[in-house]
Length: 523
Image (tube, rainbow, N blue to C red):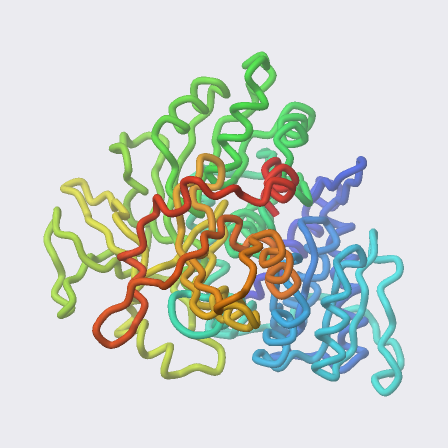
């Protein structure tokens, strides 16, 4: 099995001047430049003692430097642990400790959280700067003589871990899904064929590369075929429209909130401006049928929706351009993959039966880092139990009908209520807290909290949100807060979320300043 970084080296050798990446401000890297910068990162890491199997925490937005650092890590046979740029210091400290990282690479413009996490873990923190010109040297105690740049990526086995991506799932604290070199190759190979991609394609996205969708389904696939990838560090609908026009994108990828925002921003645009765009790939959340129809009419391209999890390298099913799909379908199983819908007792259900979705194939993760019991709970005989409820129709198309337990998907990001609730319970005035998702026109779902306060406490939603934002990523903070005397409970005293009336939040004002600031972008 070749290293997941190998395609970059291959294209740098066969077509060194072909453009690999476009960044903002006219930034452009050829495949030769990308390879050379990835090699330079690898050389510095190797000089600091980073080798096969070592974990490196990488926190950076969707910029070319992320790609160079990512492939620099992978080329050594080391493991990239990628994390959200909005993560707080406690969140990164948890990931660094759980993964046992040896070093932290943090984008220079990100908050002090990466440096704080490195300090807490007792490992070096290297800031990443534009063009990687100022990549920090190893700190005292890790100095060593510079070594020559590795000529080619290290040899690896298919089952060797390439990346660890943390996912809250639906139980316990975030778990690190181990994606192998084989997983990344399989995902890229599958989408190369399904979407009929080649070196002449011009891809573009504002998806975060630290997330599995951008990292595996977009970046790995584009690098495999040798196409160009235009990156926006943050989603802004007008900037994305300009990117499509100016770079003559042939394919793009995003989540439903992005397509909706683009539709509104392009209300007066000439469809001829987007004539180059033939394909848009949608994932992360369910795509409303009306948004799909309106987007395809406005932009003259096809939106193909898919379904996948971090644990399946972001891929499991997909719609294909030359096959009609029914409304609500997320397509059929990807080539080489299998989908089964099972009853609670594990019995496979026939078409039309609603049950838990299971996935098997080369995209299924190796397991959860350091959690064999959690791995055994979801992986049996090669089948991954997703926890999502779905139904297969007679044509083999999958329809997702519900999500596992209480997971909230806001703008394509998973928000695990228990994690938010645990933070809320740390507030001295909070007696009870329940976090749920409520429908939202822009984000699909908004994070809402029903809270019971101690007697005599002042109900101040803005202050509570500000307090939570110091401890949680912005997208996890409840933007809708309702105060109640007590939450509904069952006979055992367990809070019954299903008994919480969502109309409780109808008259609640959202954090208007945050709403105005966050609506135009998806981080």
